[in-house]
Image (tube, rainbow, N blue to C red):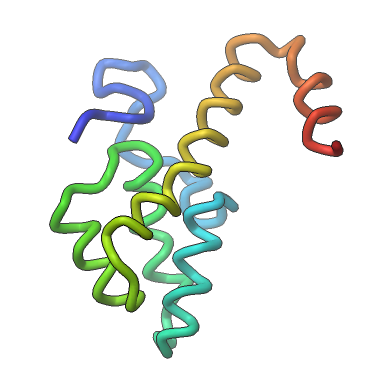
Length: 111
């Protein structure tokens, strides 16, 4: 699977970000909701490891299959759940690279 987030040679890449434990992302919300509905007591803890992996490294077919089994969904639904997360990540990168776009993004998110 291709690297979706910062590449291994990117100065930002250190294989861990402290915000990964609390970062609110569309995929994390989906994953916590599905795992909670499936009765997993530690849904948020599981999302701490799965959601950042999805955003920054992508998920292998095995990982997607495991998530699908645990959440009672199909692989296609897991793939569909990660698309808004990748779109959000791309917007974050645009704002990081072009801080002047931050105001435009805030305006667009309100409408």
